[in-house]
Length: 415
Figure 1 (spheres, rainbow, N blue to C red):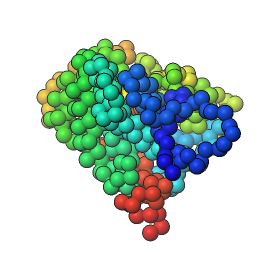
Figure 2: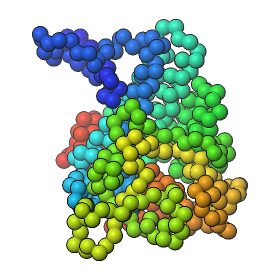
Figure 3: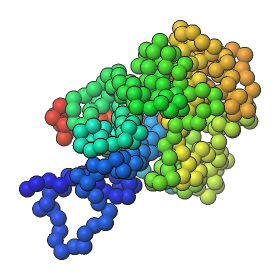
Figure 4: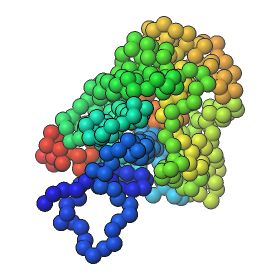
């Protein structure tokens, strides 16, 4: 029987799925929230398709940043402290003892895969399936398609692994691809995206993303070249938005906005004790007494305060991160540049006094503060050999059981 592709609407549920004609229940009114795949072939549909990709992107960023911070040392699953902390799958993340059937990790993998699929589908649709398209709309669609495909590769490279020490992922049930190769794939897609935009801010965003990929893969010269072309002081960040998608997951599950399941490591409160102006970039809230179930009633615990509204955006790349990349390159990676000026520009953007020198420890600390709750800390712990858990624990989110069992390129669990 012929398969029919459909696209679910609204974009909150955006994905492309396969449905057999034989699966339809008869004698029901026609659904109003689906569009057959073959219908989306006009340039007027490109806006809808891009919005769907951005919705997948937002779902991916909220979970990848939160889960990686729990696996790292920035936030702590509050099961002994927070009344609302009930997710065992998050306990596994905190302990680095992650089971291959962990539902949270599996769900995030699905989010990334959907973003990748929708991005590649958009490029194919514009290139091979749509009729006449205006140059402006074609460039808009291809820029976003290539950009978000690259982001999918970068996220796989940053967070997923075949085993505890080996980063990488499988694309579309393909063979395992290690993190270095995934960064190269991301860089290729970012380069391709640049062919379809003349917008100065978009060009700087893409160059900042490339600078980060080069940094993480250890190509410091490439990182410096792209960083110099990246976001500059005062530029707006590139963000995951939650205005037209589901609520920010940090707000849902990890803030006083709705539910508190994690607390932040005490060092962030100490940063503020040492310099109260640090609260400008590390907003914290004290855990309310009524939510505190710890035996030590005198202890003070803190929750993050960045995302306390349902529509709070999450920054994916900022000019401040770009400047800290350039500072790291100049201070400790043998590249040219003025690390001191870059660091002090970042500090000054938050009303924090300048420093007089920059070294490895300061770079690590500045990144810890500036990139709080954005998912960078786990990557930095691996890069700077700062692992906090016992030997043999996961330093990545594992490729999960469902992927291993469905992918002929990987051994089934139990084999």
